Image (cartoon, rainbow, N blue to C red; front, side, top):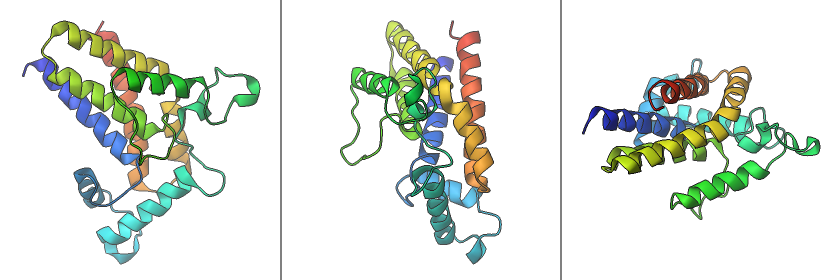
Length: 204
C-alpha cells in the first residue's frame, strides 16, 4: 500500500467515525460506540458514567436533536439547509438535492437498506457514502479508477456536504450540552474544511 492509499484509508476511517456518530446510538452495533462511550462520558451523568446510563442519555439527546417529536433544533437533512430552491420550499424536506444523492448512490452501485426508514440526504448516509468512495479508492489498483473515485468524492463534497455541514454543525453546537455531540459537530465542521483544502492543494 502506497502513501496515497494510506491517505485514502485514513480519510475513509474519519468519514466512518463521523457517519456512526450521527446514526442513532445503538449499543453494540459497531465497535466505534464502545470506544466513543468510554471516551465521551457525559458530565453530570447519573450512574457515574456507566455505559448503560450514557447510552440512554445519548439516545434521548439524539432524539431531541435529530428525530423529535416536535420542532427539531438540528434537522439532519441536506434539503432543509439548501437555499437554491424556490422560496416556499426553503427549509423543507425533500427537493432536487435528494434526487441527486439517490442517483449518485445508485451510480456507485449502492442502495439504501430496506430497514433504513429515513431520507437519503441524512447526514450519516452522506458521510457513509464518502466513506465508501474513499475505501474503494484505497482498494483500487487502477490509476484511472482512482482518479475517477476522487472526482466523485470531490463532486459529492462540493455539491452536497459542503453546502450544509457548516450550518448543521453550528446548530448542533448551539443546541446541546452533550460533550459527545459537540465533539462530533466540531469534528465534522473541521473535517469538511480539511477535505476541501486537501482537494484544492493535493488532488488538483
